[in-house]
Length: 450
Image: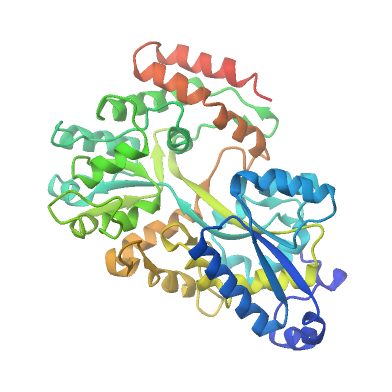
């Protein structure tokens, strides 16, 4: 239940904006953003100017390098000098609530004012607190299985949305060196492998944490994960593979399936000269985009419901904020200014707020018309069919990450960053240890992480 009346926190609305205009004109708020590239910063400053024109509240947009965000926030909190609003990744949402950096009541009031039902459930679930939500979900992207839909259709194959369907596709399509069935991540020291593995583990309902902390990996379910990962690794080229090789091989038409982020969507359509399709002689060809399909939710045999892996970003209202004005800015950014917010980088900023009560798909439709690309531009709706756009956005409804639901995101992050799972999985797929030994080794090493 909202505490709006108790705290007299005013949110942007027709009547409140008029009532606050005189006071707001005298007050400025500070906004930290990790979107610091010049063109992205300019779009945020333009939106802040639109907000000031509408409300009289000036916003100072302050770029912060993402790797420095944690230390800067901690130092600013200690000094009593936090900004009013911080655009931040998921990893900080719950830890910053525990530390007292964020005000979850303020964020919850914004979400409720905008309409809880207008947000992607997965994005809200990841930031859930006892009082509501740590921060307001802004945008996100879901990891995708990118596949050659044309080859799947010709072979009568089902989409690669399960372990079994992927294995069946590999059996039909793997024909190296002309066509590799998959390009799995096998380079142990790359975060890409960590990301892919977490998705594959989640797909089979396997997590290394529960509400009490570390939870030993279930041997039977983890063995299913290991056997599946070995199958896709064996359908991949030899060597140490990460995002670079998987992208290159897919763009060259030599991979039936890869796992990648949506930042490949513009490249598939020949819109980025630094990563052109090489499937034919035309580096600007849209041929590959036209024959590509995507899947966001993957299911393993022990988890038929499946799971999507997502990276979500949030607006956090801080403990030092001018609450009323910070709330107005966040609400504006998620409503009147939301299309501008998404336009910063549409291919990697899926709308976690689908629309409004009056128009439930308003922002999804607007997002699909935003131009993507670097050297050339085109809207996603021109490049991909409506069903595919729906699949891209729909992954956020069921998005998961280790430790979020259990309140153990900090520990789960340490487990991922340790790269223990990467290393042991690589030993298993290289035939150095069997599945039972791999599970035991992971459990032994992960138990030591605090």
